[in-house]
Amino acid sequence: MDLIPSFSVDHNKIIPGIFTSRVDVLGDETVTTYDIRVTKPNAEPAVDVAAMHSLEHIIATYLRNDPDWKDQVIYWGPMGCLTGFYLILKGSRAPAEIYDLLLRAFRSVEDSQEVPGAAPVNCGNYLMHNLAMAKRYARRFSDYLAENAGNPAIFEYPRSERLVTEDGRSFFDS
Image 1: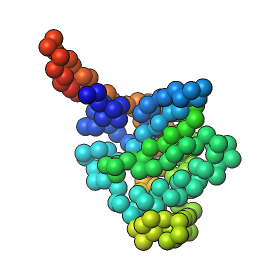
Image 2 (image 1 turned 135 degrees about the horizontal axis):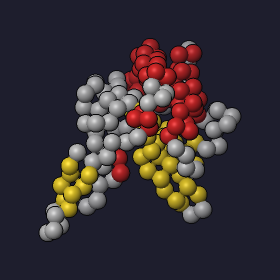
Image 3 (image 1 turned 30 degrees about the horizontal axis):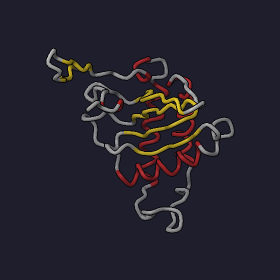
């Protein structure tokens, strides 16, 4: 069975950043899935669940209200491993082209006085939010992005190579 693209990335080498996870053509439309990696996998602790949930609500709201981007946003949500988010946009852009949008989105968390949609009628687990921690993670990531704006590594996935033997067995070499 083929690995999905997000599992073909060497998670021991990936650093926080903005990466293209996959590009799909659906009929006449191209959609791109971006890996927004907030912490270093397998080296730093995962993002606190309640903080991740709050970041999901705040940044999804920000992205879907940004006048220049709201019509391009298909999805914003957390990774199961809690080290980052997936952003799905219409079109195909290099990760550096969405850098400013994401920097603004994460910086907007600092100004949040409440978590949008954190009520029983709007959210399936409305009690599981932590705005203070979300602000801390957002500040840490936005500061990191700003400090590394000129570093191409924050936009380039480290890939694992899949080696296939003559008899069809697959191995990964990182």
